[in-house]
Amino acid sequence: MQYRYEDLAKMIDHALLHPTLTDAELEAGCQAAITYQVASVCVKPYYVKRAAEILAGSDVLVGTVIGFPHGSNTTEVKRYETEQACRDGAAEIDMVINIGKALSGDWDYVYQEIHLVCQEANQHGAKVKVIIENDYLDSGGAGLAADQLKIKLCQICEAAGADWVKTSTGFGFVKQEGGGYNYQGATEHDLKLMREACSANIQVKASGGVRDLAGLIRVRELGASRCGTSATKTILDAYPTHASGETNSDTRGTLGQGGY
Image: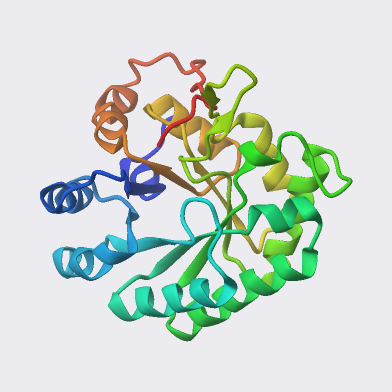
């Protein structure tokens, strides 16, 4: 199936989150977001104000991250981060849940934290995407198998007022027995599971490991409406070939390769 350029471009939250990102790279990234007509940029909190200045007059939104990347901040800190980000110009908030509390089965804590951030964001007209970081949930927790745990968290996110549930941060590296680290990010299995776990009132965002146009299209086919990626140029530069019909329509994008 062929898609319009704008339908694919407006799925992308252009990620500008690398720890070493410089001021010049922020400027270039925001300009690229305008050029490629993506949905938003996702920047670190201290860059929100500058990104809003650069993107003023365009239809590219400013998004930022809260409690990122490990979700370890206190609830009040996450609320205040959200307040300041919105005042600085953020229209979308990507918050990380308290993963340890989720694995402990402290559902009230998880709910209240998400609800408080959503309340704060909504006061400023902003929307919230809640990151549950699936890589850390793959062994299950709180007496639940992995899939049941992910479903439970999707249901809590929806009940708490989230606009999206999001697979990953792009930085959730899991230590292996040999001492190395592994990271999958968005997988087909998790995207299907999350879409089925939520009602039509809440959307799904993929993040981590989507690096080509076939991958973006696969994300869309699985029911996700947004995709966080730093590979925007590579993905959208391939669109003319897609539009011409020169690509194999049976080609499926490869997901779950980790990274942002």
